[in-house]
Amino acid sequence: MQKNTSLYLDLLRFAAAMVVFLGHAANHHISGGLLWQIYPYLQTAVIIFFVMSGYVIAYVVDSREHSWDSYLASRIARIYSVVLPALLVTLVCDSIGMLIDYESYATIKPTVDPNQIVNYSASVFLLQNVWSLGLNPGSNGPFWSLSYEVIYYVLFAVFYFLTGFKRYVSVFLLFALAGPSIISLFPIWVLGYCIYFLHKNNFRSINLLLSSIISIAAIVILIFWAPWCRKNLEVDIPYIRKEIVADYFDAMMFSLHLLFIQSTLKVINKIQAPVEKGIRWLASLTFVIYLVHYPILRVLSVLSPNETASFSRWLLIYPVTFGVIVLLTPRTEELKKYIQLKLFHVFNGKGLGSEIPQFK
Image (tube, rainbow, N blue to C red; front, side):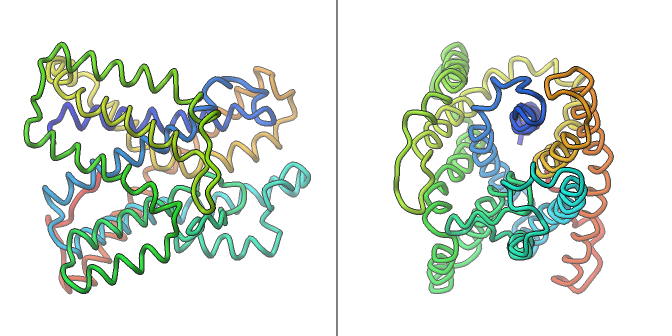
């Protein structure tokens, strides 16, 4: 992957994660509605993550993860290095929050509810949203998309690494496990995969000016029309997301932007060096931001004695939440490397040395 494209994807990842963070923080009971304009883009950010995920997976299997073992070890390490700490943070934050203000947690099935044992158990195995079960752990609603992501990882691996009868049986079992809602969005993930190979094969259908116009127009259309689509184009189909039309609108607009932006990125290549280190660092926070921010925001909103729309309250919830994320991220990176080492040792029966793939 070209460095300018990699940096841009990192920047997009961080921006999408911050949309989710700030969109949830915009809830009235947390911040009094500060930055409420971001809230309508929460689901759009998740769809952008799905497209980028397909793109990145195409890159890693094309460049370094050429076997089932290496692919599986990297995915497990990447997911669980953040999932396990996020579940612990959720449990601790929700428990503290409910001791202080139980009523504010009543609408999200607090962790003292026996049903949360099922929720946390399903979330450990990343099955909390198969067949639209909605068994998210405690207050941590963002966990919903992980079932989608993990199914896509496995479904792709089945198509990519297996052949013949094993492939077809595995696909059938995965479809049966996932349910229609997850499977119906799989083509969105595949869009990202396809865009990577178009880029690799030097997609050059039009000139630079027209490419730039299309990429900018696509993102502008996405920004202005995504909320309208989510509000007005809902469908009522059992086990299918009611926002599926909007999901595909978001995916198509973002995919157009991503497909045509590469030519523009090559032109502005010279500015990447001064900002590369900062962008890489921000991108490293992305997964932790996504999975950890909400239970922290919830408990801080309960702990804060100030009015919901006060500056002093904002000064507490935003820096503290982000600070916890910054402190936690290096620990998750260490855990990721540890899990990778253990898994590769199990799969290969030997030390890894320089063969350990570094997932981005």
